[in-house]
Amino acid sequence: MGANPFLGVFLHWLGGLASGSFYVPYKGVKKWSWETYWLVGGFFSWIICPSLFAYFMTNDLVGVIKQQSASTLWWTYFFGVLWGFGGLTFGLTMRYLGMSLGMGVALGYCAAFGTLVPPVFKALMPGLPVGASIIEIAKSTSGQVTLAGVGVCLVGIGIAALAGFTKEREMPEEQKKRVIKEFNFKKGILVATFSGIMSACFAFALQAGKGINDASLAAGTTKIWTGLPALVVLLLGGFTTNLIWCVLLNFKNRTGYQYLASHVREEHAHHGGAGGGEHGPAGIAAMSGGAMDLKIPVLSNYIFSAMAGTCWYFQFFFYTMGATQMGKYDFASWTLHMASIIIFSTMWGWIFHEWKGSSKKAHLLIAGGIATLILSTIVIGFGTYLKGKQ
Image (cartoon, rainbow, N blue to C red; front, top):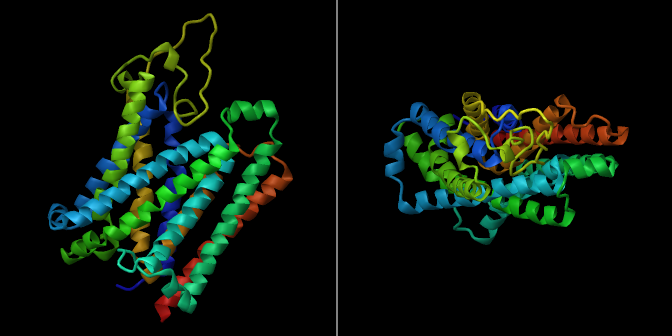
């Protein structure tokens, strides 16, 4: 089965929709701290869903993984661990820069590093387990068009970041302090840079796990599903990073009891998916004379966290499917992924009125940014289409 770039772009858009939407169910979580619901959702994101989907949709999952060399398994897992740091620091970027500016800046770095670092390093180290080098890509017309699409995407992300900066600059100082209590531009840029570099490790992990994909194909798995077994190993690495961090926070914040408790302590009563916890501005508990509601909706919290975790996994479920259709230029998959995330996360921002009260300039900028990102996916899709015609 040959490459199908239009199907690849569509699948990447589905992955972006899943990624841009995964946090919505967390808004239904009540009286759990961030580290609690993040880890519960993470079990579904990084352990349960990868294992179940790979087991039922590929052939001989256990046998395929067992036949891999220790080197293949280690590098796939290790790059997954490093990628996990990118996910954690992405949350810190939101803390220091706010959602609008933080999303644009962090994803801009993720797109640039995740797309261009692997082929650039391939040119410097030919033995690296990565596809084509940046030099090889730039020599062909299709590669040049695809690189142009990457450039258009970065321009779109820049416009989106400018829109977020404009929106937050227009906010009254009192409102800004309430929404972004720890706003720190310098610290946010440094964290965003680190997050982008670490997030690029996902692309390295996928390349390191190519042998797993090949073994799955040889075992009779349909090509479009062959990326799923590698995700089992890769996401185990990401789970390791997040597990350690969340457990440390459980000890530090004394929130470990929340997993099984029916009632929350008063100091944690304001926590929940709507903004409390580690990566969001903490709400302020009502200090009225009436009794405070401390009952934890345990079942619904687990259900909402499971929904969020499953939705999060689907971004890479569709990502690996889309990558199988991108041909030699699957390096552009990361750019498509980042662009589609911004598109759909901005859509949710409009639905939840996050841009309400912004100036016409801010609205025009974000609309222009989204239009540019959509254009970038068309250009990249055309580049891969040209490659398929060669």
